[in-house]
Image 1 (tube, rainbow, N blue to C red):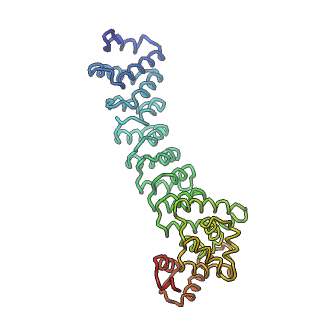
Image 2: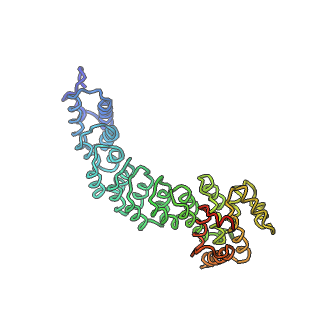
Image 3: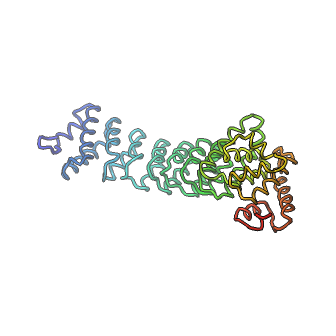
Length: 375
């Protein structure tokens, strides 16, 4: 800098030839920092930009790295400087690719197509990545890049792109785990993920995403059915089940209908643990109340939980049936229980419903059907 504060040809000369790489890097950082703090006049700014245009080709990586790191958030950084740095080796390009707003989607797409995994990963971590760039990143087929994109909750990702990712990386926990923890997911994606992820991630998906009550119920019970027997044998089912029910309860989704639907596929553990959570008593006490020979224990328990009378009647019928039948998790047991419960419930209510499945009966009772409630 000259004595009057402006940039001079001598400054450029010193930057390009008279100083060591570390000294040039320090000078670059000083000039760039003053530029970003708006301490330069318009003339000085243009002079500084000309210096930067020379330095983007500096032989020393340290100088280019310093330039990129210092200029990455500069408002109105000239496009040619930004693109030159973003197209450099990854050590130089990463700061620009991660943060610079001077780069257009066209720039980013070109770099994704022509540069390394490190370049692509830096782009995947940018704030507010567009849908077009997210798709371009997914099309790289690179697991690390796609995982970084899934971790970036600000990235805009279309349903089509999510589906592509699931097609290729659905079985990869590196990819499906951050996808499951995104704040928003299309319903179709959530449904597919539920069948792919671990039990704990499945619980998170069901508890934290906007699924309809019926869809959430079906997903929960389907996943429970698949894992229940093996987990019981290993002695770990109760802890996992409790975490799931706690999450559902905390999110206001542990409804009477989901408790009844569990019974309809023979999941007595879910049923009793859910009632215990709602009533704030032990599962062993719930078990005794549910199996009270006179039926009064279940009635009083459901009264405490404000479960509609019609649903209580169905629960009584279903509990009796579950105790009669043996549920071992074999293929077809879900359907066998459903069919048996439907028939028993229809008989109990004297065939007053023209229903083809228990979901219809549940929805009728849940909607406050007077005739059913009086049964």
